[in-house]
Length: 220
Length: 360
Image (cartoon, rainbow over all chains, first blue to last red; front, side, top):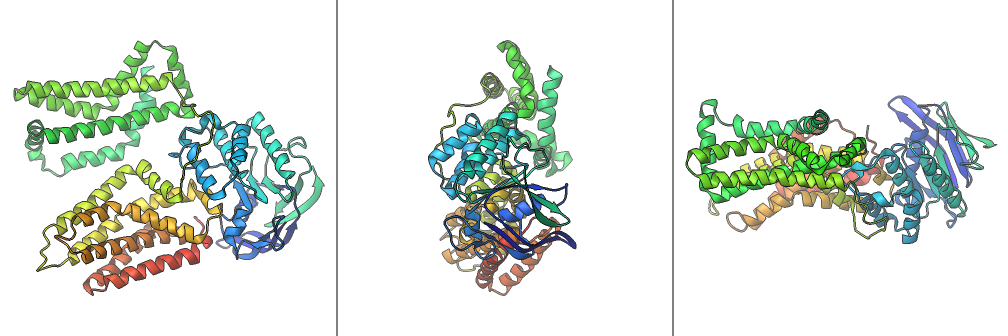
């Protein structure tokens, strides 16, 4: 599903990530590592938000024979990816509806899917309010809702459980479980919190350490 | 209670608007020699009292300021950090009104103070009708804005849609433009006013038989470079609040087109001013030279910010270098070629470097 080939990233002279070769099959991955180990950088690289210095990233969706390269087909690659930031920031002068419409005009999701996500995350009552008045928890829910729009093959969630209340955590884990049942849909998420097996069943660990990343074959 | 309201609304508002007040103060008091201040302001107020159009303009300015204050108070009331203010609903309407009337009067004090002086001058000049009118208007502004705030306290958050979705086209260029119109309106208004005024003043007396637009072009270029602080703000917003946009499946061509539309809309006031001055006193070709040079420069600056990691200081230095090149273009009469070159560089930068850019 996802293949990182000789990917490395430097900030000045400091090597932040050096991944010689990593292939991941479809599934749910929990990215772990200490602060500053490069988890967010890796997620942002995979999301296409920041560039990387060398190598390539290939992603294959279930309906495609050939994998899509982030370098060679940046737009096509981004069609397969969804991303939610750890501390999402949006233009405060927009209302929730307007931000949602901005995404809808680009991703063209089904209206029923959008409505289900709005109802599921419980943000409907706030959608007409400017984002500047949204609490951090509600903004987080909106960012997660946006990450579930459309039919992404890989959903990247950076610290998805932080700032969420108990019901929000449950709703998120239910949506993750539901989307995982769609063939070819994978999740890669980072979290410092101890995620119990109830919230993320059968997640596999990915350890980021010493600028590299390794798969630990241990279901949690 | 009043101390809390003062800290929450009055102190924060005046701290946030300090730059704006300084600008207004310098505009009204900094341009005139101290010895002439009194006579100048007296003449200004006399002009207001004698010219209804001028008075209407001043009333409009007071109204705009009041709306700004109301919007600020509403923003604070709606903010999650100030949920404790909902406890005000426990007070009787008369008490809420009395407290917020005081808050409003303090927030509107620059307008109320100036209106008081106008009333005093009108009374002194025996124009009692005008004095009563101004007084009534300012009382109405203060009272109605207080009622509006009272309504917002009693009806905290609009939840009328119940989460039903509606279709509305929101594009990147629209968000960028709305950012400038809502978050940078004072800066935008100042830059646009300067650009349009420069064009009008320098071109209105052009003579078709003895035409020389070179100086006007150079000064207009300075007005375009004046957009630099505005573009830096847009760029900052783009990198922080809209960084999700980079992860979205939008082709480079569409992204470039959105930036191009944004630049065109940003230059619209100057284009309209030029349209107004065409075909007399300036020719269509001259107007196109102004638009071409201004637009290509603006697009180049936007593309530079979107693709090259550059500090604010270096960006401003680069603007100076570009001005030097433009100066050569105007003197050497190859401005049209230079505009084409700027457009070409803008496109090359965008298509070659956009995905390789990372904000540091």
